[in-house]
Picture 1: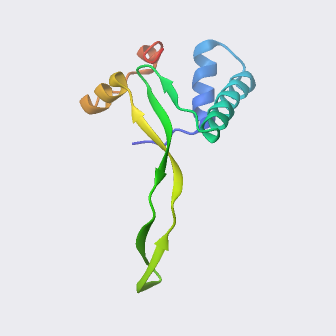
Picture 2: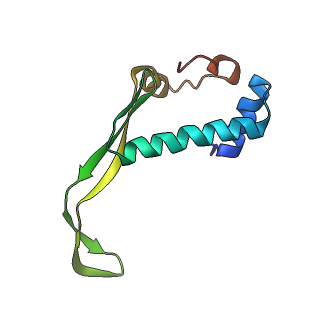
Length: 109
């Protein structure tokens, strides 16, 4: 399993679409910034076939300090981003079939 960085993703999209990487990087960053802004406002983001991003509240719980194993600590309530994969993504992941670069186009429209 490989790690795909934003740089690698930008380069792949730029090559496929015949665009300059700086143009793609700008669009991708705008998209990520907009997603972050909407989530920060408490909005839910839904992308058909891809998935849903939403804010959930994690309840307060008791944990253990790894540096001092016998001491219990209170982990406060916090907000977190939850991602639920869409039907198409879930199916592809469960089957273990990743679309190739040529078939990736249009998979999550």
